[in-house]
Length: 108
Image (tube, rainbow, N blue to C red; front, side):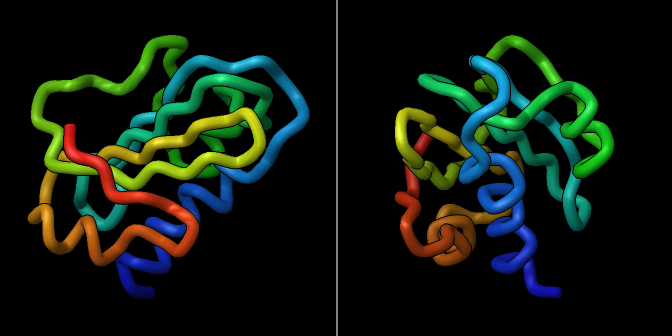
């Protein structure tokens, strides 16, 4: 599976699921050997500590993702939820190219 497809699953897995719990938080995990952190704010989403752990084997936090070491990210807005997936390795060009349709590349 390509990284582009895997990174899309971050958005498909959490960013587009609206409806369960108010959220301002994040899920940090490693995917294909790269440190990744998906953060959410501004609405309701299905992300919980359990879903972060079970879906991505990640660590849930009520805080936003760590700022140190961010290379770039992909931001998607779905309804009132803003989801940004930050990548802590790779090049800006690679991350920009991997952002799925409907999302926007963002610098730290």
